[in-house]
Image (cartoon, rainbow, N blue to C red):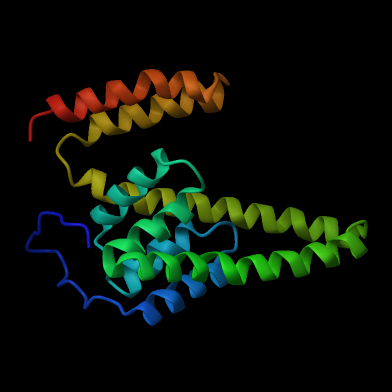
Length: 193
């Protein structure tokens, strides 16, 4: 598992999961993954199973964002490998992708047959709103460890800068990240601890 400094408030580390437990956990994440699986991944790994601390989850998630491919898929592979090597990476990946893929194929078939029904269109609009709520909720939970750091105002300034430049000004995300990633690394490196 990823190492992080322990504090008096940190929960005791949970026992290392078996390969079977990894598969079951990621299959549950996949099946719970309404609106995306980030919320459910954090809930399973940090809150329910206590296989990671909140800070470890944020660190692993940040690492997985810079890797090519879907971030949560990367997280399943990185986490599974850190716990049980290559078999752990494989079962976490299959657990995450397998059930969801089967369900998407089934619902894709149904949507192709019945997608033009007006009531279904209105229902999907409601589902999209609920998914947006989950994203807002997980953003708040992932920000909690940052507020424990005495430099949290600097981190909040970077987050606001990204939101304003990409969300409001509609600047290309790649240009914003090319500037703000080195700035945020410099701030974190130079900030007093």
